[in-house]
Length: 114
Length: 362
Image (cartoon, rainbow over all chains, first blue to last red):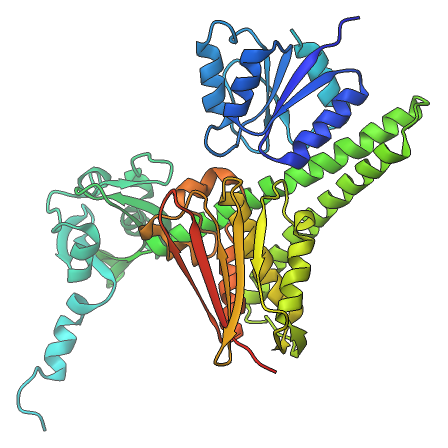
């Protein structure tokens, strides 16, 4: 069975660690990025099956990063799950609440993986 | 008796003109313009529109509801006062002035009756823009607070459920990993405790109930101890911290509140410091202790340097960083209560330096 790799993009270290630990526990490989710039750098180096993207980040927020991804032919097909604490929505992305339960997170990740 | 100056009768005759409330009077039943006082003209930003009447009022005066829809004439207070023969109040009228500015109005209309017949209607309007802005700030704050709560709550929930799921499936977890998980969960709880303390501080400060203890404290020891365990207290980031403090600095104060001042300043420095080193300097002279926290991060534009001490305020560049916008306000309140002061110098892109001075001595 090939292991799926998930990129977690969130400026909050606690949140990155939580998702990293949980997803690894359930058989996923994870990569973490603390900013949009870091995420782009990682994405240009290695393929991932899914991006878990925090929408509210300093410098380059989730919406801006998403716009860059969509404009890039090499990256535009990676599914994005937007993680949000508010009402912000991203076109063409699946959404997950910051207070989503583990079952929902795993279900959304499983369904959304490329 | 003063010879010059108007008589009481003259003042009473013209008092409506000088009332600090916008007054507008129209004739019944059509609502034709009769009178507007100075304040009305000031609020409206233009002279009275003589072409306005019951069927055409919102447009000439640029009156909208908060959702930006033209205010329906049927709901206009003066129109209702004419029809319902009673005092009518409306709070959510937004006047779009011709110069592009907006004013939030509270308008009250009252019919003038003579022998049981409505002859005129008088409207009083108040500019409530400041109250509306304060309400908006509070709404933004509640939304920010909910946002801030969600990260640690979400993290705790996922952590606990991961552990449960794994154990229910008969899995096992090493002591080292379990320790990490527990430590991480504890950190989330501490974040929540800090948040709830900050929220409580808002009501304490507003009610003037911030009480300071007075007990012997060595400020130098307090600063060094705090610096040593800072990594645990700063969520997410732990940039290098350089401390320059004397061996001892004994005095009398409230150690918890002093720590709170330091933690708030240092966590801001870490948050906006772009990972670069933070300098914490403590010095004392002439009965005054001086605490200086300096970072090399995004900095604060000159025009925003006063605003950052206001509650719920964040600079435009800080908005995407999350947070409640309370830290510096709380710091300023505590420092003021200590009979001290706080100041900032900064240049955008070159970091910020916060200086706190408090009376200090044994």
